[in-house]
Length: 216
Ligand code: GRF
Image 1: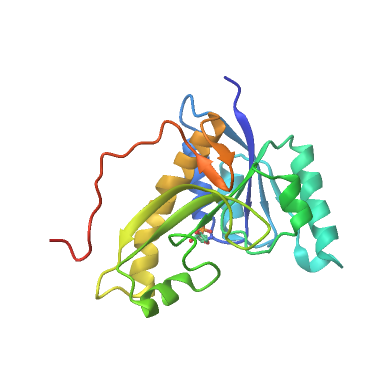
Image 2: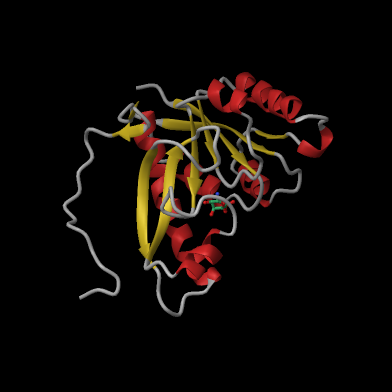
């Protein structure tokens, strides 16, 4: 089977990008990373991507008059790299509906909560304030609304009484790094179908019955 040509958009640290790149290096992984693009010239993640020998690009949003122009420039890079799928990985710019719809069902995002709960920024702070006993991470197809779209995979993570934003973020991130490559693999293998706002994975099954926090 041919590898799905995948571009990753970042703005900063790029640890999820690293997880995707590392997964794509594994033999028989069904996707290959053809471009790592950042809107910030000094994004930490660019260093890793360059070291890994991947094509990189910078499209600095501060250099564009309008969001349409900025996104058109991104789109040119994606087209030049013959991109088939886009993964947003800590990409901190809101994308217009035109861009998102052009890539409909071919653009993924990861968010550090159990969506649709806690969309937007400062997720872990709001999770702690709300006192929920579980949080998590979600990989989903992107829709024009922020952190919206058919959910492909979620990881549930218990919130502990002594958690801080930092400890929680670290535990969630560990699972982000697992589920993003897992989602990319499922999508690249053609195992995810979008229907009526839901991502259907016919092969999906879980032997877990559920768990409580605090546990029994
Ligand atoms: C991650 O927590 C991701 O879920 C969110 O932004 C953070 C990016 O981290 N969208 P990194 O740049 O992938 O390390």
